[in-house]
Image (tube, rainbow over all chains, first blue to last red; front, side, top):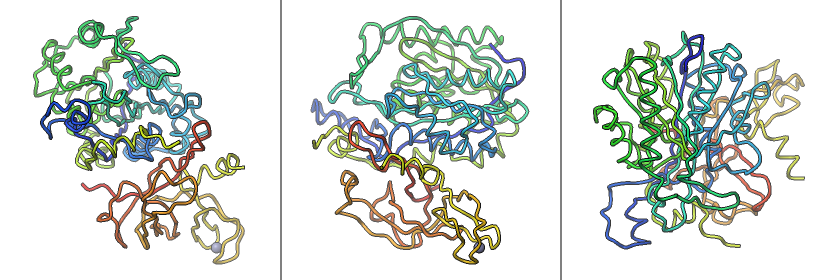
Length: 348
Length: 132
Ligand SMILES: [Zn+2]
């Protein structure tokens, strides 16, 4: 799928909270198996942070880079599965914070870990059809896990935002995008439940791998490209092994993928994961580079995108905040502080 | 009522919208209806950059009601680059990060949540500028 007029990313930004917990610390509390420290961490939102504040900072960083009048945005769309309000959009708060209201569409998107890329496809359609000059999309999460669950080792926090606009203003122009979606119950949370469930035998091969392989293969056929045509490839990253394995299966060289797998540094940021990886790829890309972005959301589906980086990237990204700065800014917390910050200790 | 007050303050809370005097260019935060410099009542909304420096800072151990869960925290007077001085909480900081003259910038955080079923108030705090 591609729009009738050229569309691309005119600005982007990410955000990662400052606090980190070592997976070995989670292990110490619940299993005591003596896991080695220093191998993998996850980002922990501070006591005054949530998905909304993460999305606001990512959106502000994207706006600074794009340097456009916020009133020219016709949509502010964020995807998440950890909304602070069950009813009341996060996107209206984000849109207000960047000054985009009231003449903009604002809505929250939901599809496990891939609502941000769904919103990206819709934003591409909106700009590509000339309904809007600019539209913002993004994904942010503060992923929750049941204390002691295997998910608790990796559920991180972070997000990213992208502003789509006309191709001639873009730092990366879209070639095409595809989606591959099935009705698969691999991971879910019932209404009113605090923590999600993973349907064991449906995760992995029939879920993540099948859907990403399908969306990416279809995309490459559609634009007549092969894995060798992409400088970088960014995949959804629930852990550090899955993206590397799916990349290898699809024929992408490991060194084109690994720098954008942030799971060992910040955990699985759910709706933010593939989008933060894509932002990091744009931070280091050169004009002419082609970047593949492939998300995955349980339930289940994958959206794939091919972007070509333009000359504008060199000047425009200087106005932004490199993801690397957030990766470097970190303060380790122990399980007790993590439990306090995440609201796992109730005082009333 | 809390609800209505926070709704009215939303734009200054989320975007640091203050006022600028049309006749003498003085800038105020929060919004004013009359300029304290020249007395003019021709003031327009003005969005501040959110960048400033710490001019006074203190650590709070005994917090006002509603802020207990954030203790201990730092409260500061921040001098914005446009001139106004604003009283705000600092966030994502340790003792060694805070000193008079330190450059800080505005972020939006959860300031208050009214119980488990009331509205969440988002507003400005300040944090040290990211190191390059
Ligand atoms: Zn005046």
